[in-house]
Length: 362
Image (cartoon, rainbow, N blue to C red; front, side, top):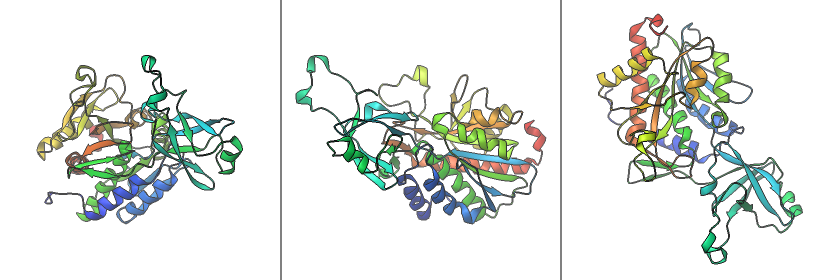
């Protein structure tokens, strides 16, 4: 492609709005509305399902169907128990990290709107330094400034209210995107950018393209499991995040040697169909797109697994975005990797187009 920089000012404004909006697992609808509004000029129609997965479709009449997919949900907490003196204990909604919770501000989502709170924690002066008690799921709690359970309930808070962090998007050192929920709203952003580029470059694909923003990945790939039965695709290219393993306390012998800034990560796993993966790596080589390889053993742990093993088998592949500090409020990715994932998916779709031999993937 002629342009060196893919992302436009409009793209980045969309990204910031999309990331700053809360989209907890099971409550993704507001984020999906933002995503669909941005995608609307670039697709022919939309599909949505009962639980909120959103799909923009190009060439819906085509019999051969290709999916590009990310997931829209973010980890969060649920109100689980309210004490008589007005403190709130929580349970996870997805893989929320208890260790980062103390002293974090939170938004509690109620029918009356957002109620602000904080994860409280005893002062260092009052703790037994000879036997420090670390944060765990059973001792972290939220304080909303109330002294009784009744006060809490009058704010509209009840067991089952979902809780998110308010941390917002920022850019570090010019080229590092930082926010909560980059896992994996960056995926939804990148596939939307692929659709934008196809439209801008007036590309006409000979197959149906389904741009899928799935829900409920963080609790077991559930949105992808549902939507793949609806679409019944022939090919699925999934994008998610993986760990940058260059930070302290990560063992490369276990997690692999991956680094943000060195390009998209292409997965090797039983769920990844060999011919589709080879098409993607060949495309990267042909267009001089840097990439890294990652062996994921038995499962990828991403929506790739849900697509691959559905409908009698769907040729699936995984392109990941290297990310630091996963499942924290300061997840970090490199802008160059974001642009290169977009390029790689875009050029891989054109490679499929040029083949015109869809039986290649069977």
